[in-house]
Length: 532
Image (tube, rainbow, N blue to C red; front, side, top):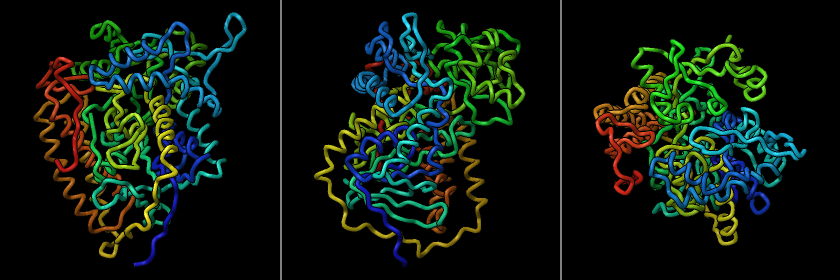
């Protein structure tokens, strides 16, 4: 067996979105950092985030109000301590981003002072969303990428897929990870004092998603296999408004558009959200997504419509240039006509269970961003709290890692990756078929509205697929699609088991067999433990 290539680093960060790059930049003055990116460094969910980042900058707003809005949106399952921690550190986190050079929109007030333009989104009682037009995530990602590329203490490995975490024998401490070079098509290894998962969510488990292809639940699956608990996996947020057009899959229409006055309409042009909720289009995402799903099924419609054409054209072009350009490219002029939209899997509210330092159950292993369950989102994430969570918890992880660096040991050796008994696959069709089957039954059985019978069918299929995929994995050399499929089928099983465990409807989890919500003091997070 030939010697595999090995990297040494103080901190290995798996993932290159807002969470991973923020952590890298805040550690690089104190440690050697290695950042692993599954695709190009810029690619990931952060790049496609449109709306903005929530923080209290308005003198009429308050942290207490941000906390209260988040708790309401989270439907009684938020951890109040995590919510207070996040909202309390929000302004500090945004000021750090501003120092990095993120160009949030500003305007000059009546006294000639420059102020940040704040917009409002669903669930928020005040305007508190900092944004860069309608492409905030892109502005954040490009800024952070520019910074990390210039830093001498940060090593970047692009087009590398993490396979598995390496722990000691009793899985009490993380020692590094096996990684796969997509270009060399070889397995390599990283030895590190600390490892941070910043791999994003798992919305690719669904047939229709607003997420990029890299959102395949890798970090959640790797952490579970390494011995970490996961929590609240049943709460998958479906963004209410994804563009419905064959030439523009996965394109999100930001919630900020509804914040700026857009109406949701049936195909006949009538509004329907006032029939479902007093907050109408500004109700939380779970309410809006279920309303759209209901209307589409009731009417047999392929989509509903989001209409902002009643606003002045200049206003639309100023606030939503990205959406305007994208829609125009497929023949839609949003200044004159409504946008066809459908819900799409958007955000994984649960994930790897962590504390306020972003620590997992395994020593020296951290999880930040969408891969983690901090307790902030509860049963439903409020708009524009996701990028905020990335930055706040990256700062928390950085503080904790810095305090441990001097005493953290490096493993002397790591076990070699053994592929002496595997061969190149001549049956890629198996992966393709299983991939499609998994995403289809997750969409049909574990989607916006669920039943126990659907969930049981989904679990049966997931268990069969998992055995088939594991057998395939044991006999053939790894590939990008195989690694993602192995992770996704495990995450699908965790989602289904969590959904079956919740005997009520709450937030993003709606089960027709249990259409009621228990009292808040009678419910609790769904926590799954490996081996149980």
